[in-house]
Image (cartoon, rainbow, N blue to C red):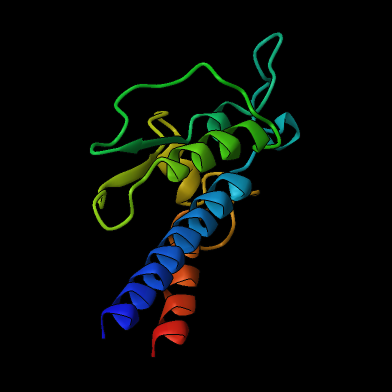
Length: 139
């Protein structure tokens, strides 16, 4: 029985980590990068997109509270930081970890404020998708 419990615990932790990484990676990759062609007004001089994507912050114990001055158009650096953070999580002991974006316009973009935003938003749509996947794996 003890070996079965260890095997189930290991598999559960692996599924949990895989699901969190999949969710966070999808949120970051689906976060749109500003394209002035879609804007009503001209962008500021020297504008370079990627600030919203670069502001996704992985933290343990409490959500991030500040904003970053990091632009990441393709999301690669942000995904790498998130993956490194997830690798530091002790699944089974650390249950509070977060992916936070504190830019003031993040919620507006999530709710469809950009024609590039997925129909259900980059967060909400992926939460639904991951929940469906987990329900199929656990039922």
